[in-house]
Image 1 (cartoon, helix red, strand yellow):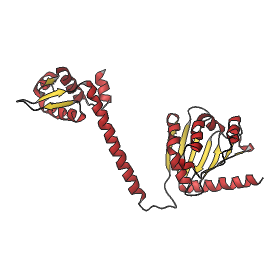
Image 2 (cartoon, helix red, strand yellow):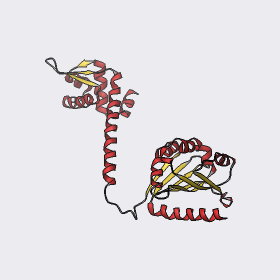
Image 3 (tube, rainbow, N blue to C red):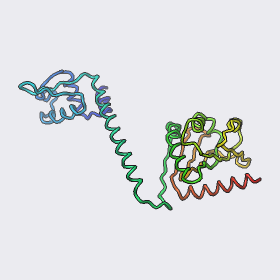
Image 4 (cartoon, one colour):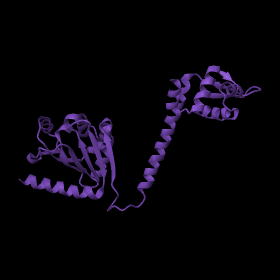
Length: 257
Protein backbone atom coordinates (compact mmCIF):
# COMPACT_ATOMS: atom_id res chain seq x y z
CA UNK A 1 0.00 0.00 0.00
CA UNK A 2 2.68 2.53 1.05
CA UNK A 3 4.70 1.65 -2.06
CA UNK A 4 1.81 2.67 -4.33
CA UNK A 5 1.20 5.89 -2.40
CA UNK A 6 4.86 6.89 -2.67
CA UNK A 7 4.81 6.22 -6.41
CA UNK A 8 1.75 8.42 -6.80
CA UNK A 9 3.50 11.36 -5.10
CA UNK A 10 6.57 11.12 -7.32
CA UNK A 11 8.85 8.26 -6.22
CA UNK A 12 10.07 5.70 -8.76
CA UNK A 13 10.49 1.99 -7.91
CA UNK A 14 14.13 2.23 -6.83
CA UNK A 15 13.48 5.38 -4.79
CA UNK A 16 10.62 3.65 -2.96
CA UNK A 17 12.75 0.61 -2.10
CA UNK A 18 15.81 2.56 -0.97
CA UNK A 19 13.82 5.18 0.96
CA UNK A 20 11.85 2.54 2.88
CA UNK A 21 15.00 0.61 3.70
CA UNK A 22 16.78 3.78 4.83
CA UNK A 23 13.75 4.66 6.95
CA UNK A 24 13.74 1.18 8.50
CA UNK A 25 17.44 1.37 9.33
CA UNK A 26 17.35 4.99 10.42
CA UNK A 27 21.01 5.58 9.72
CA UNK A 28 23.07 3.37 7.46
CA UNK A 29 25.82 3.24 4.89
CA UNK A 30 24.98 2.96 1.19
CA UNK A 31 26.84 -0.37 1.23
CA UNK A 32 24.47 -1.84 3.81
CA UNK A 33 21.40 -0.57 1.97
CA UNK A 34 22.74 -2.09 -1.24
CA UNK A 35 23.28 -5.43 0.54
CA UNK A 36 19.83 -5.44 2.15
CA UNK A 37 17.94 -4.47 -1.00
CA UNK A 38 20.03 -6.31 -3.57
CA UNK A 39 20.38 -3.09 -5.54
CA UNK A 40 23.72 -2.26 -7.12
CA UNK A 41 25.83 0.01 -4.88
CA UNK A 42 26.34 2.57 -7.66
CA UNK A 43 22.58 2.72 -8.16
CA UNK A 44 22.05 3.24 -4.42
CA UNK A 45 24.40 6.26 -4.50
CA UNK A 46 22.60 7.69 -7.54
CA UNK A 47 19.12 7.16 -6.11
CA UNK A 48 20.21 8.54 -2.73
CA UNK A 49 21.17 11.82 -4.46
CA UNK A 50 17.66 11.98 -5.91
CA UNK A 51 16.08 11.36 -2.48
CA UNK A 52 18.29 14.05 -0.97
CA UNK A 53 16.99 16.49 -3.57
CA UNK A 54 13.45 15.47 -2.69
CA UNK A 55 14.20 16.45 0.90
CA UNK A 56 13.51 13.04 2.52
CA UNK A 57 17.11 11.86 2.99
CA UNK A 58 20.30 13.52 4.18
CA UNK A 59 23.93 12.55 3.78
CA UNK A 60 26.20 12.48 6.85
CA UNK A 61 29.82 12.85 5.76
CA UNK A 62 31.22 13.91 9.12
CA UNK A 63 32.80 10.54 9.87
CA UNK A 64 35.05 7.96 8.23
CA UNK A 65 32.19 6.51 6.19
CA UNK A 66 29.29 8.17 4.41
CA UNK A 67 26.02 7.55 6.14
CA UNK A 68 22.53 8.03 4.78
CA UNK A 69 19.92 9.21 7.25
CA UNK A 70 16.21 8.99 6.44
CA UNK A 71 14.30 12.00 7.72
CA UNK A 72 11.03 11.46 9.63
CA UNK A 73 7.94 10.81 7.47
CA UNK A 74 6.70 14.31 8.32
CA UNK A 75 9.46 15.64 6.09
CA UNK A 76 7.56 14.42 3.04
CA UNK A 77 6.04 17.90 3.14
CA UNK A 78 9.42 19.09 1.81
CA UNK A 79 8.41 17.58 -1.51
CA UNK A 80 5.20 19.58 -1.49
CA UNK A 81 7.06 22.82 -0.75
CA UNK A 82 9.51 22.15 -3.56
CA UNK A 83 6.64 21.54 -5.98
CA UNK A 84 4.93 24.75 -4.83
CA UNK A 85 8.13 26.69 -5.42
CA UNK A 86 8.57 25.08 -8.82
CA UNK A 87 4.98 26.00 -9.77
CA UNK A 88 5.57 29.61 -8.71
CA UNK A 89 8.65 29.79 -10.89
CA UNK A 90 6.75 28.23 -13.82
CA UNK A 91 3.94 30.74 -13.31
CA UNK A 92 6.43 33.63 -13.52
CA UNK A 93 7.95 32.20 -16.69
CA UNK A 94 4.53 31.67 -18.29
CA UNK A 95 3.55 35.26 -17.44
CA UNK A 96 6.80 36.53 -18.96
CA UNK A 97 6.25 34.38 -22.05
CA UNK A 98 2.70 35.72 -22.46
CA UNK A 99 3.95 39.31 -22.21
CA UNK A 100 6.67 38.71 -24.80
CA UNK A 101 4.37 36.81 -27.15
CA UNK A 102 1.77 39.58 -26.99
CA UNK A 103 4.38 41.96 -28.41
CA UNK A 104 4.87 39.87 -31.53
CA UNK A 105 3.17 41.16 -34.68
CA UNK A 106 -0.01 39.25 -35.55
CA UNK A 107 -2.60 39.36 -38.27
CA UNK A 108 -5.52 41.09 -36.57
CA UNK A 109 -7.84 40.26 -39.44
CA UNK A 110 -7.60 36.52 -39.06
CA UNK A 111 -6.43 34.08 -36.40
CA UNK A 112 -6.86 30.34 -36.16
CA UNK A 113 -9.68 29.49 -33.72
CA UNK A 114 -8.81 28.25 -30.24
CA UNK A 115 -11.39 25.94 -28.70
CA UNK A 116 -11.81 24.91 -25.07
CA UNK A 117 -14.24 22.35 -23.67
CA UNK A 118 -15.06 22.78 -19.96
CA UNK A 119 -16.82 20.01 -18.05
CA UNK A 120 -19.39 20.63 -15.31
CA UNK A 121 -16.95 20.04 -12.44
CA UNK A 122 -14.82 22.97 -13.64
CA UNK A 123 -17.52 25.16 -15.18
CA UNK A 124 -18.28 27.56 -12.31
CA UNK A 125 -14.59 28.15 -11.55
CA UNK A 126 -14.02 28.80 -15.25
CA UNK A 127 -16.77 31.42 -15.32
CA UNK A 128 -15.09 33.31 -12.48
CA UNK A 129 -11.65 32.86 -14.00
CA UNK A 130 -12.53 33.98 -17.53
CA UNK A 131 -14.85 36.91 -16.74
CA UNK A 132 -12.05 39.49 -16.82
CA UNK A 133 -10.65 38.17 -20.11
CA UNK A 134 -14.10 38.22 -21.71
CA UNK A 135 -14.79 41.75 -20.46
CA UNK A 136 -11.41 42.95 -21.67
CA UNK A 137 -12.10 41.50 -25.10
CA UNK A 138 -15.60 43.06 -25.22
CA UNK A 139 -14.14 46.49 -24.42
CA UNK A 140 -12.01 46.31 -27.57
CA UNK A 141 -15.24 46.64 -29.55
CA UNK A 142 -18.59 47.73 -28.11
CA UNK A 143 -18.31 46.65 -24.43
CA UNK A 144 -21.34 44.42 -24.90
CA UNK A 145 -22.20 40.78 -24.25
CA UNK A 146 -24.59 39.70 -27.05
CA UNK A 147 -26.52 36.50 -27.51
CA UNK A 148 -29.23 34.26 -26.16
CA UNK A 149 -29.41 33.12 -22.53
CA UNK A 150 -31.29 30.03 -21.45
CA UNK A 151 -33.06 30.65 -18.13
CA UNK A 152 -31.59 27.48 -16.60
CA UNK A 153 -28.16 29.14 -16.55
CA UNK A 154 -29.56 31.71 -14.11
CA UNK A 155 -31.04 28.92 -11.99
CA UNK A 156 -27.72 27.09 -11.64
CA UNK A 157 -25.17 29.94 -11.70
CA UNK A 158 -27.01 32.85 -10.05
CA UNK A 159 -24.16 33.27 -7.54
CA UNK A 160 -21.71 33.94 -10.36
CA UNK A 161 -24.16 36.31 -12.10
CA UNK A 162 -24.58 38.34 -8.89
CA UNK A 163 -20.80 38.47 -8.42
CA UNK A 164 -20.42 39.52 -12.06
CA UNK A 165 -22.55 42.64 -11.57
CA UNK A 166 -21.78 43.50 -7.95
CA UNK A 167 -18.18 42.44 -7.28
CA UNK A 168 -16.25 42.37 -10.57
CA UNK A 169 -14.38 45.65 -11.31
CA UNK A 170 -13.89 44.79 -14.98
CA UNK A 171 -17.69 44.74 -15.45
CA UNK A 172 -17.79 48.51 -15.16
CA UNK A 173 -19.11 50.00 -18.45
CA UNK A 174 -20.06 46.52 -19.70
CA UNK A 175 -23.51 46.11 -21.23
CA UNK A 176 -25.44 42.85 -21.56
CA UNK A 177 -28.02 42.59 -24.32
CA UNK A 178 -29.48 39.11 -24.42
CA UNK A 179 -32.56 37.38 -25.69
CA UNK A 180 -34.01 34.82 -23.31
CA UNK A 181 -36.85 32.37 -22.89
CA UNK A 182 -39.29 33.71 -20.33
CA UNK A 183 -39.26 32.10 -16.89
CA UNK A 184 -40.03 33.11 -13.33
CA UNK A 185 -36.40 33.11 -12.28
CA UNK A 186 -35.31 35.25 -15.23
CA UNK A 187 -38.19 37.67 -14.61
CA UNK A 188 -37.00 38.05 -11.00
CA UNK A 189 -33.54 38.91 -12.31
CA UNK A 190 -35.07 41.57 -14.55
CA UNK A 191 -36.95 42.99 -11.54
CA UNK A 192 -33.58 43.75 -9.93
CA UNK A 193 -33.27 46.47 -12.59
CA UNK A 194 -29.57 46.25 -13.18
CA UNK A 195 -29.15 49.14 -15.61
CA UNK A 196 -26.45 47.45 -17.68
CA UNK A 197 -28.39 44.19 -18.03
CA UNK A 198 -31.03 44.16 -20.75
CA UNK A 199 -33.05 41.02 -21.39
CA UNK A 200 -35.53 40.73 -24.23
CA UNK A 201 -37.99 37.88 -23.79
CA UNK A 202 -38.11 36.46 -27.28
CA UNK A 203 -41.35 34.57 -27.72
CA UNK A 204 -40.17 32.65 -30.77
CA UNK A 205 -37.06 31.55 -28.89
CA UNK A 206 -38.81 29.47 -26.26
CA UNK A 207 -37.40 26.24 -27.69
CA UNK A 208 -33.79 27.25 -27.21
CA UNK A 209 -32.08 24.86 -24.81
CA UNK A 210 -28.64 26.42 -24.28
CA UNK A 211 -26.95 29.80 -23.83
CA UNK A 212 -24.97 31.38 -26.64
CA UNK A 213 -22.80 34.45 -26.01
CA UNK A 214 -20.69 36.65 -28.27
CA UNK A 215 -18.19 38.65 -26.24
CA UNK A 216 -15.47 40.53 -28.10
CA UNK A 217 -13.40 37.89 -29.90
CA UNK A 218 -15.07 35.01 -28.01
CA UNK A 219 -18.02 32.76 -28.77
CA UNK A 220 -19.27 30.86 -25.72
CA UNK A 221 -21.88 28.11 -25.64
CA UNK A 222 -23.15 26.77 -22.31
CA UNK A 223 -25.52 23.84 -21.85
CA UNK A 224 -27.35 23.76 -18.49
CA UNK A 225 -30.68 22.12 -19.31
CA UNK A 226 -29.65 18.64 -18.13
CA UNK A 227 -26.59 17.16 -16.50
CA UNK A 228 -23.79 16.94 -17.25
CA UNK A 229 -23.48 20.68 -17.94
CA UNK A 230 -20.65 21.90 -20.16
CA UNK A 231 -19.15 25.01 -21.73
CA UNK A 232 -17.50 25.42 -25.12
CA UNK A 233 -15.36 28.51 -25.68
CA UNK A 234 -14.18 29.48 -29.16
CA UNK A 235 -11.66 32.27 -29.61
CA UNK A 236 -12.13 33.44 -33.20
CA UNK A 237 -12.17 37.18 -33.98
CA UNK A 238 -13.62 36.67 -37.50
CA UNK A 239 -16.58 34.48 -36.51
CA UNK A 240 -17.24 36.55 -33.38
CA UNK A 241 -17.34 39.74 -35.46
CA UNK A 242 -19.92 38.31 -37.84
CA UNK A 243 -22.11 36.90 -35.07
CA UNK A 244 -21.89 40.21 -33.19
CA UNK A 245 -23.21 41.95 -36.30
CA UNK A 246 -26.08 39.45 -36.54
CA UNK A 247 -27.16 39.83 -32.90
CA UNK A 248 -26.71 43.61 -32.75
CA UNK A 249 -28.82 44.08 -35.87
CA UNK A 250 -31.41 41.57 -34.66
CA UNK A 251 -31.57 43.40 -31.34
CA UNK A 252 -32.11 46.73 -33.08
CA UNK A 253 -34.85 45.33 -35.30
CA UNK A 254 -36.76 43.71 -32.46
CA UNK A 255 -36.43 46.77 -30.21
CA UNK A 256 -38.09 48.84 -32.96
CA UNK A 257 -41.21 46.69 -32.84
